[in-house]
Length: 299
Length: 172
Image (cartoon, rainbow over all chains, first blue to last red; front, side, top):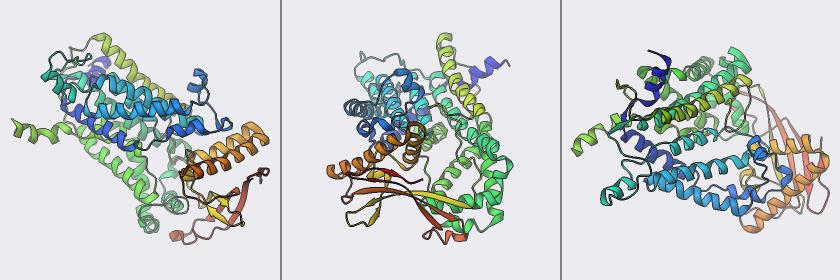
């Protein structure tokens, strides 16, 4: 099989719409919850002495956006997230969510530090703006059934289509990039010494001085060198093997839960939440398998 | 996890559509590939260097305190009291102002932070008391079993101070 064929099969093999639509509801709903109190407009009040524009903003040549622009963007963003979650005017909502969301997420990175915690959300918002999400199981679909002249905005419903597969695969690839890159960074920065019990011991304890871990178990675990060594090695192996989850269903069943558990462990033991990463989890959920009994019952 | 399907790629999608989408996928993969190779970050691309360095057995932490009119110090929470700055961004921003814009800009930045605290307090965004100065300290500890010494740092060094109506001062 040629590489082009493999590429096409990976991204565009036809699938039913339900898994993607459930990803839509959980991703946009989760984002709306996560950003319910977003305060991006406050950056408009900050003195220009703190303004260090990123290459994108330097190219645009804009200074600090005004409070009114940031407020307008925030309102548009939240409305768009709500509409996208419900599937109301979905094509427009996903495009507005991408444009306003990318802008609002980008602004804080111009104030002294570029941080990667929310960067992948921009790509996910972009992917869903390009997708045909919302053609089924949405307010749009309901309106189209009641009012046949209700516009489809180019998202013609189909029983199965590659359009319903690639956004989910995009979510997979985005997640894998994060963890694989993190594993490579550890190897390049620290080598195999990263996976030693000593390093993990220090990592567990240090956060009790600088953060507020949710549980105190880390203090006890740090006293168990064998456990520390095993957890350190599992972390590194889990991150570096993340790409295998893209291609093998059995490895996926092993690697993805392991990485989600690692994220939970970081939250509980270190007190650090990469909350934006959690929004990628819905793309890994086997919605088709979970929904099968309900679909059968509905018939 | 998702079951693998044996269907062929969807022929109902036009080649042009597939090409545009493939270019988008390639941008995601190659953009991040570049950042990983170059160990750089150009938001929204990143090499995700989370906890990549070795964790040493010594730890330091910077804290910001407000100074009350009677001279007492109260701890401030950056996320709340100097919003929209957060812990991650605040110290990095201060370092960059100092390193890239010089002492005058640094002093100006400190004064702006003090004014920001006051602006948020007057607006009711936080419930902190009125303060007359802002100070930053760096605390250092050796990492001990059970983090038993976390409330007793080995050293506490004043880094910066800004006063309302007075000159801002950086302690080096």
